[in-house]
Length: 225
Image (tube, rainbow, N blue to C red):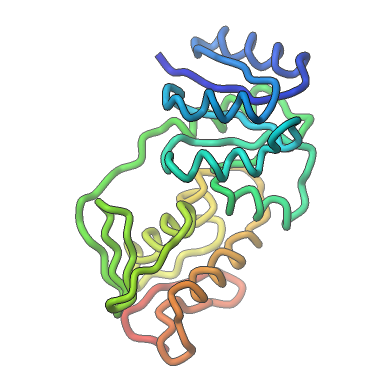
């Protein structure tokens, strides 16, 4: 039984979503404001959350951030009329996994839900990139002796680059494999997250293990160039 929480203040949209999802075999629950959505989300009983951006009492961004304080894994898809690059980045940094603009086709939403519900392959092995150590099991990152605190998506991006160390990762592949988005998407969000990673990892020019391949993407390497 797959349970989906819908946090949406427009009753008509919520009814449409619930009906369509339940016809597909999902079990749904609905919250009409952010406070109630947070209460239900923190119950931990949902496999995925559909989250409106503009909500009464507690907006979607704040709700997402609060959920991510204790829940790093439940997929969250934003449903919103906002669609600028800056807003997309803000939603992803808050912990969102995907972002779909209103109005949207139910078929597209359904495919995005299916993508997010696929279980990622887990590995217990630690990963190394130069002086950077990733402890997958405990979700920790260290630069030498200093622990670095990354968001869920920053962690996933760094993990992906290290697992593909020595190979150029193009932007479209990163969007598909890290964000699980197989639709047309503004890959500019990746550049923002890479810059954030470099700052948090304190990667100076002479110790930058993540190189930009202009016009293509990025490559992680133990030897800075």
